[in-house]
Amino acid sequence: MLENMTRMLTEAKENKYAVAQFNINNLEWTRFILEECEACKSPVILGVSEGAAKYMGGYKTVVNMVKNLMEYLSISIPVAIHLDHASSYESCVSAIDAGFTSVMIDASHENLNTNIEISKKVVDYAHARGVSVEGEIGHIGGQEDGVVGGILYAEVEDCITYTRETGLDFLAPALGSVHGPYHGDPVLAFDRMEEIKEKTNLPLVLHGGSGIYDEQIRRAISCGICKLNINTELQQAWTEGVRHKLDTDKEVYDPRKVIKAGEANIKEAVRKKIELLGSMERAK
Ligand code: 13P
Image (cartoon, rainbow, N blue to C red; front, side, top):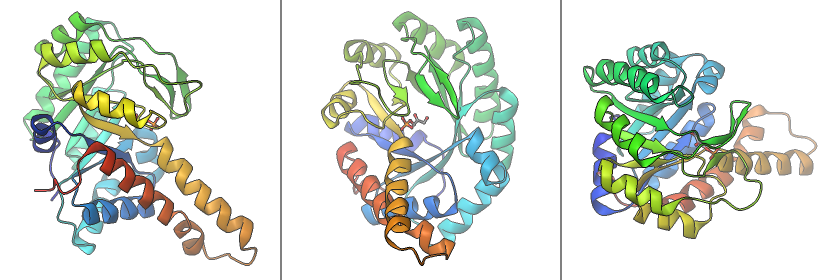
């Protein structure tokens, strides 16, 4: 069932597990992810960056594609279509009007007051339409759609003010994770994570989920993380399968066979993450 993220993340928070956001890049990925999550009976969040939405033909195309796939594949698990790192209020409005069930406003590069102002506007528009909202504070580093940025750790007091003033549903505090591959070991501020959980009482989101060690992910869940975002790991898994196919089968030219060569790898990566996060058999 297509829904916003509120019910799935509230249940995750109460029962101390996390739901995966897998970012989608095309129709085939969406199908592979939906099929595997259905097989695992796990709720899932389909993350769509602005760049990926543009690539796939815009927000309406994405929504219709997901809806039609869900119907065609008889998907019964809870599914959210979530705009990842929206750069503006206008972008959130377009996605919501197109049928996205959840949005993330990322005004984390602005000062706190401006971040609050923009995020609050998004919350007002979204909540009036039954859409859930995630917001970022501090700045999550790494690579986002080709833009490289550094980490700026979230301050506890800012998190309290930001969530209180905006009324948003989920908080993504920057606590050391980065988008894209890590250079060196990930260093996460677990104590601060726990303090933010205690003081905001909201489900927390960890971005840059690829490359974080399993032990760190388990600890993050115990410190309040209810949603883990994963993109790079699936990209790497899919590309490995396709590269192997092209290297070993010089005769292949049917694009369906080429793209499908990444299916098993994506599904395996999805299942492993679901097992790690504890969302297996949680679909209601
Ligand atoms: P990774 O690409 O590092 O998995 O990060 C994904 C993400 O956080 C999307 O918002």
